[in-house]
Amino acid sequence: MKPAELFDLSGKVAIITGGANGIGKGCSKMLAAFGASVVVADLKLEAAEATAEEIRKEGGKALALACNVTKDEELVALVDKTLAEYGQINILVNNVGGGGAGRESPATLTVEQFARTFELNVFSNWRLAQLCAPHMENAGYGSIINMSSMSSINKSPAISAYASSKAAINHMTANLAFDYGPAGIRVNAVGPGAVRTDALASVLTPEIEASMLAHTPLKRLGEAEDIAGAVLYFAAPISRWVSGQTLFVNGGGVQTLD
Image (tube, rainbow, N blue to C red):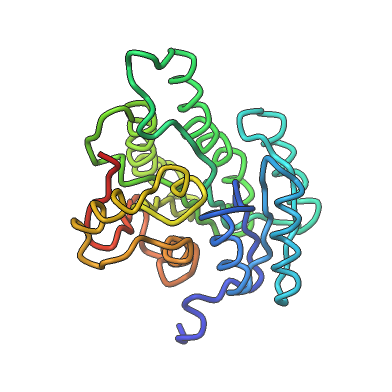
């Protein structure tokens, strides 16, 4: 394989959930920059369209679609609309997720909130992989990238629902690699450390940042592009014999809120 082909996504179609902002936006723009036709799926259509327009202005191909990943009919519609527009699916980035990191005290967290975190972070990923896999097999190229987190291996207070859901992502990824491998589909996960996003900004203080960096060999917090680079690696042909792995992207260290 020629060097220029190792990261070439020309002719490939990628779905990125939660693709309008933060890490998702970074992934959408990164994959488009390397030639993929990108479907920016997001709960907020206006935000998705803004990101898609940025990509188109930069010479890329992008389609914005509204999608609530906790509603099965919208996941089915996302796949159907992608196929109607582009005719195939090759890459799925299950980026969407959420939880009350640092705010999940078992004294106040309800069973419904705990279940909702798994519905958003785990169940939607599994279902969308199930929906996309047959089309990846038909296309002869498939890469599923799930978004994990350093919280999946860290231990901290008030984060039991989110952290356990991300730990489930790691193990689910490793097992789905066996299920989909015979079809030529690779399944991997990326586990970000602390990344400068709007979500982190809501809790970040100079004191918290200093504490995080004290245990981070590369003395800065992550940027969305840092995570998108790992997603690109898993999406591209260069990782064609890599599956079932979780790659932690964390500046070499640990960043927690406590």
